[in-house]
Image (cartoon, rainbow, N blue to C red; front, side, top):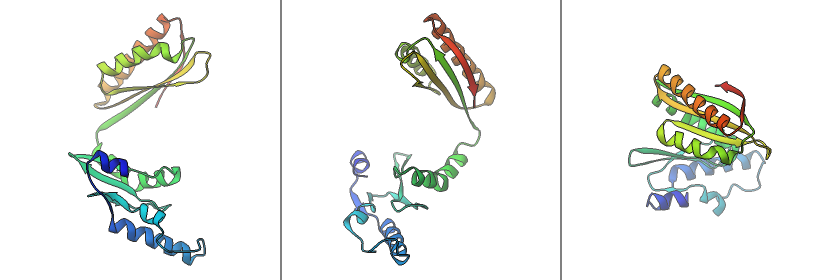
Length: 191
């Protein structure tokens, strides 16, 4: 939260709503005999320190709230790092917003397994493709040092037909480049 506040040039303040929610969670844990004190210790108060104008997002499985804040018409969400808490806050507060905002937007992903060329040998072509087609994101996942790599081609766009054409064109371009380097494409799958 300190980093976010500094980046947005906002003060870090104790958010009253977040503090009340945290206090209630610790009170409940104390009453159940899970913890020894419901006192608002400094470590507990720290979870309620949010950048000015931030909105706390209730954490259904933990204590630290998620945070939503707007900056120059951009919605920024910050979630705790504990996987169960992150997932629960995402499902409850963020996923519904994304579904509503992204109506009509399609997401496609193709996974390609490459053999015989190193991730570093493919990197230049991957960067060129992503520079030329802004809606394309390609992530590489090296499997071993023997030159096996999984490439994930991700596209998000409106219009199903054009998106699929771009996905196919991107995959073909990568396959051509890989073969030109002496590599092989073992398998591809769409999601």
